[in-house]
Image (tube, rainbow, N blue to C red; front, side, top):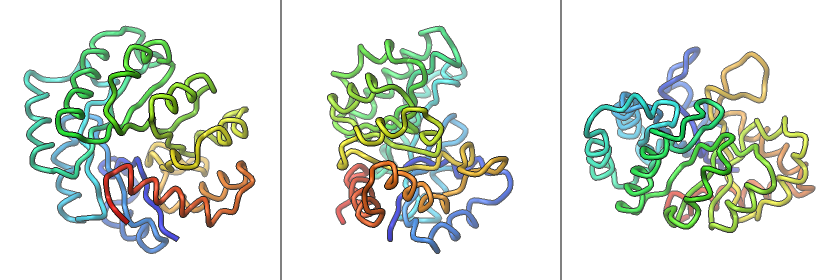
Length: 249
């Protein structure tokens, strides 16, 4: 079985180093990891990991909405330079978060700029969306061809809008805490589903850092919720993952 962790912050682990995380992931079949950024200071770390582990660590450069008010002048030009230097890189993690900050700006302008960069360089976009359903309504028609809402744990209404706009939905262990998880998981078209750990910030296990080695357990949970064979689910999700990052199997 093969897996891709579609959202991980390798630069943020406290209990283990990134090299060990990657080596252990490879042992159980996680052969690709999309390493996302939250701050500009993450970009060189993510870039270095992608150089140390080519074709395994897929870099993603972005500004998380929590840090939209921390950007420095001409940040967008420096981000564009990273996208030019790493033609396989994605744009992320970007988005809107009304729970963290009820102010629409500067989240909105930073998000819009990153959407434009993703479209300019034809890169998949990784979206963080928390309690921002209404804010996102102005964007569904202008998102890049490939985008994913990561760690989805929302309502059916938002899910329907993501699917209608042509987006992918990535599930982490957070979906297992959703009281409507059975309905949500079964509504996701099989060809639009991705899996992630969002580690180290999320884990299936209490009081532990998340880890990509948890992906087989998460896949089994999703398969059970869908009443489908776990092997076929894993194969479908891996194919979806490769298509999302523009890699042919």
